[in-house]
Length: 93
Image (cartoon, one colour):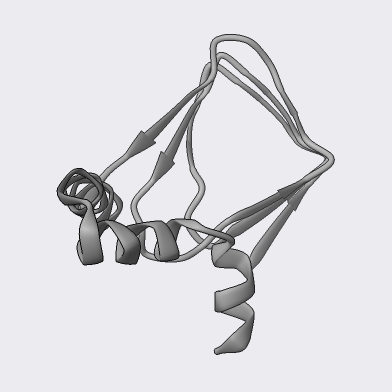
């Protein structure tokens, strides 16, 4: 994972895939997640006017999980499983 440390982002579109942001500041930015790789943030300041956007694979997965949740039952349970504490599952692999 690429580490980005002590950087300020102002009015930018920030591709977050595969990056770890440490002590960064974000003002009026768009975080763009494509779903190619996970990302992480530690000790960052996210100011007002920032938005999270999904594109490509992330949008497809998000849409599918919403559909599964709406069905309830076994599909809803599977979606809740994937949405609950995903960080622990990624460490298992």
